[in-house]
Length: 359
Image (cartoon, rainbow, N blue to C red; front, side, top):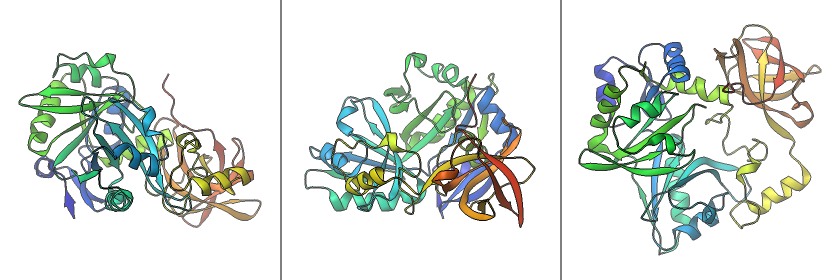
């Protein structure tokens, strides 16, 4: 099982470790609910080093991304980030990734889901020309996420750059001790936040510096338990919500597809767009207690109409919630459905996403 460069530090502070897509990662440091509320009200610090980091360089890098990525890479200048997808020829999703156009030097950094890094690395190499270099830097680098309304205050203590001026989905280089790290205004929690990329040798020093800077803010170290709960309330897809059995159009990610350019999977997706999808991605709330699990069935009118992909209890909604796919005719907000939970069928209704909206 793979481990991030910060693994030993997590073990020393008695974090509860768990398997996450082939990596041994901290599930929690103190309590999932406490960590969740820290991010919503103050700040949380995550080790997300398990996410893949692939550098794409060379004169042919833009052309490779135009061919394989669903977004138009030429529209994103240096110092910006774009969320998009990689699809196969049939239009099914290989990965939903975050593409960074690194500042000043024209390189690209691709951040993939942990389970899909090897697959996307091979896919890119398969379609790359000789004028492109593709490097897996996952093990050579660290990735931290500082999320929450106090995250700017914490980060400002480490730099003279005024981080509050950074716009969402932008990035910049930031001096840190004797190196330079990349800071992006991105995250997976629905809160103001940043992701930081550093050489592996500087990871622990960066973690400790952020920890010291946040001591008076309510900052907590956070694991994947709270991160998954935060992303669920935002309706963001994880590995069980989006895989090679789904297309971006079924998943509600049509805005991440630029049909004006040619890319692998475009023809199949164009046809699907014209004919319409048979299933759609939804969020739902249960009327009674019960945690829906991935793979549970969704029913209406005494028949199965879909499947649950994620579920948990939402502290924000104070209800049990979930994500899944249903036949298109049942996907409208307000539609009443039933969710299979431990051999019971619990009444629920389809709701608009996200579940959580900042005031």
